[in-house]
Image (cartoon, rainbow, N blue to C red; front, side):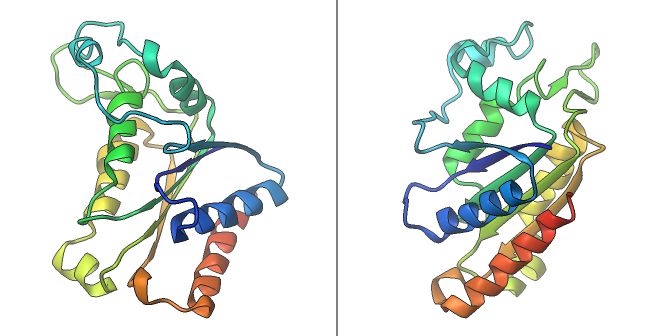
Length: 197
């Protein structure tokens, strides 16, 4: 499958970047075509421009500044997102990627009466989110109710790519891990991607 891997971490030697490499190697070994969108490396601006926002309801959506990102998203049959969870949310650069790239006429269409949006990412079959958190699992799941997972599954993929199979792998207490724990989590990534074959 044509797989888009989106990485969102400013440090090249981070755990996030290492986990992204595990995913990329696994996908490549399985024969998938892999396109990497490292948002910091390409200098992606998360700021929705005035022209982009004004065109949200005046089609066509102005995607001229992000045409490459739009093209890569539309070509993807599978999506891997690799990012840290900060303050129980997306890094700003990844949130901006959703705000700017998943626009009307790209990821969805507005209903004529501004009712529920209509999905456009019908080519997207699989999505895997790989994230790390500083908190223990019970804070994310029991106190916060997994806000990042709910947004991805329901708000983004659920409305823009309803046929997409979604899975999320969360690595908790990331600052306290030893190398064996990271290896075990890396094995979970590999097993999750093997199922795509």
